[in-house]
Image 1 (cartoon, rainbow, N blue to C red):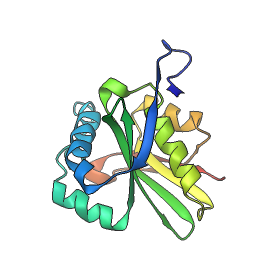
Image 2 (image 1 turned 180 degrees about the vertical axis):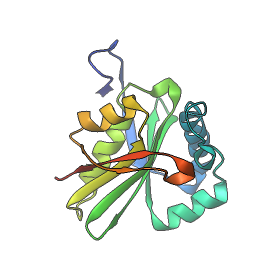
Image 3 (image 1 turned 135 degrees about the vertical axis):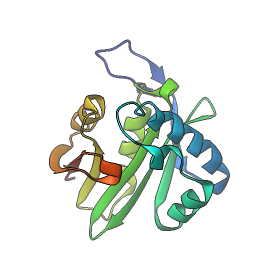
Length: 163
């Protein structure tokens, strides 16, 4: 059972993490679109909200994808891969109705548990999203790099954690 942040109304949910299958991909895209869609007024985020099933299938050939289920419904997903001992974490997405309930935390913890060949975990988020920055810091990640004017002219902040 995972619980949301203690400073907020405490919400506990049972989160089940498993590798995503191709049958999950349409629902994963819907969750991703909803999760990143909330930033539409802050950033141009079309690459994450308009990803196609074909590009997700291509990504899945090269990366691992975990998904989170709550009550049998897909609540979130994350992609990751390891290169030269660095586990790169990308596209952590949690359905807006399941945010702040421990779903994202459960996904990150499962990556850290399952990835045994990494000496470093590396994740980036949008610089102007204080909630996301705090999320990674609460999980023990340290700010490492700022990437100005990156994807679609986004300013990103990247975090690292050394197990």
